[in-house]
Image 1 (cartoon, rainbow, N blue to C red):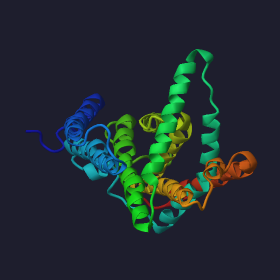
Image 2 (tube, one colour):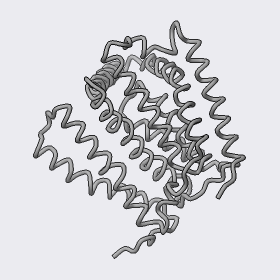
Image 3 (cartoon, rainbow, N blue to C red):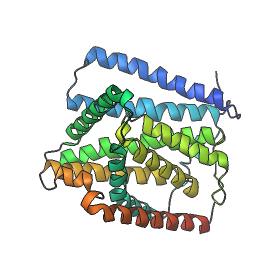
Image 4 (spheres, helix red, strand yellow):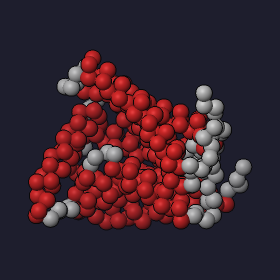
Length: 301
């Protein structure tokens, strides 16, 4: 029987295999049971249930089990042992909201990427996949009333923010950083830590399978990674992630209600409102600088 913390050495490869093995161990039976019970053509309501289940069996439970095996202090390993100040709890959501038009601008620029003529078939399939994902997301986010909207916020904003941050920033980034995680040196991040942040951000974006949103999502992942490093608390990127998802869910709700125009929302920050997108990136970066300054000067426990 493996004792808690028995794998607390620095064997990153071994830890990685254990973590991935736990994901497969939990995911494969779940997928088999789901297909046997529900089938392939499931309703939107069923898919929402599946998303909740996947959040736990793919992102949360394997990471918690793996870290429990290789660390004597799993909460500290995941940076879940430290909270945040009320100033940070206000500053981070504000920063994420300010960044929204800038993210829209980056998304528009990403969508303008054209592959060489030799990859025309691949480009067409990627666009079809992107459109299919967009339509599915819109169906997921559709809500007729406030209770349904609140349920969508839980399923599409809160749970992904918790699960994906535990998986990517908490577990993956810690493994690639040094294999032992624990407190980051917020005054001088090592080169390996920067590499870990960007590798994790790349994987975070790739797993969403949206080529024409790859760059802004990767940059978002890197931002979340640096928020963790400078704050030392996983709750900070969780809050930022939740805010970003909430803005998207609320935007789709307003579009579905006919209050906002979908094309205008998607293009806000580009085209005629390009100045808003540029100002958003500048102002958001200034708030990020303020966040880093506050963390650097804050007392550390």
